[in-house]
Image (tube, rainbow, N blue to C red; front, side, top):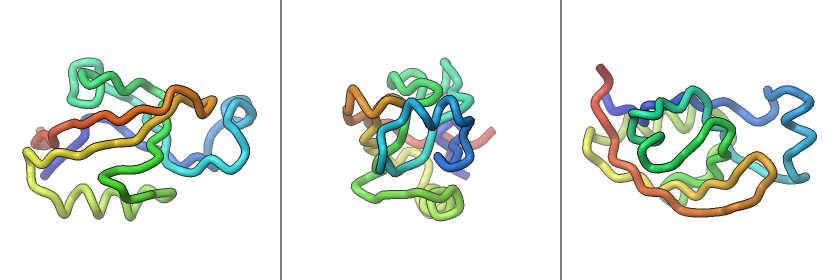
Length: 101
């Protein structure tokens, strides 16, 4: 089973302090528990970065994103459009899905 070696959370479920930092109207998923030695961590993704897109697809709920990841094969590349929690520093980062251990 493929993995991004990080957890994701829905934006609406975050603490009021973090939500206050986010710009109005931002949509996506929040990276959490990013393993520094995992594919996301090695690519430069950090805890509380926001995934705006994955391979051009937009996700606001965990289940559709997980379904999408599980439909792919280990080794598949995914390009994320991300920004920080303040909506700044938008960039694209490409990772390769790892096998869940």
